[in-house]
Amino acid sequence: MSAPLAPGEVVGYLGLGTNVGDRRAQLQAAVDALSGHGVRVLASSATYDTDPVGDVLDQPDFLNACVRIATALPPEDLLDACKAVERDHGRTTDVTSPDYVRHGPRPIDVDLLLLGDAPYRSERLTLPHAQVTERRFVLIPLLELDLGLALPDGTRLAERLERLPFDEGVRRSGDPLRVPDAG
Image (cartoon, rainbow, N blue to C red; front, side, top):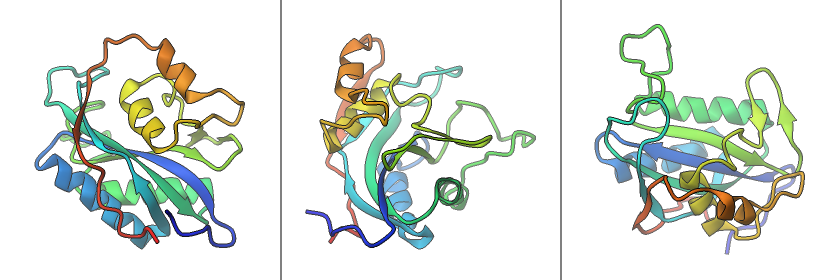
């Protein structure tokens, strides 16, 4: 069982993915790094091998997982923390860089999916994440963490998963990632 929430903390969920190098080690390194950015990881889903989706399909399969977190960071600061972990672990997000390929291979992706019970919208961030209900590789590990999870508007994520086509390959690959901050 996770440690109780500290005053000011809210529960959130992050999606993790990678298809470069030692994929499991990349995911674990991201989980381990989050605590240095004001994020407590409470639980991890299993890892899943997933087919690439989006604009670049000719690339290695991804390894994905979701983690339940606790943080007192406001949404924009949490987004900054996720982006810092990506940068620190080799992710290129500079669209002017010759190494940048949108939806291309990447050493780590840390997506803020859900935070607390209220929606949030700014120029940089929309919560819940716009794709949270559209991707099997997000919903399957997310529901593993909480089968009753719902969006702030009451939409049950399990019902959304039931409606998705089976054209996106998602295969359980391994045990949950180690959670260093769990109490």
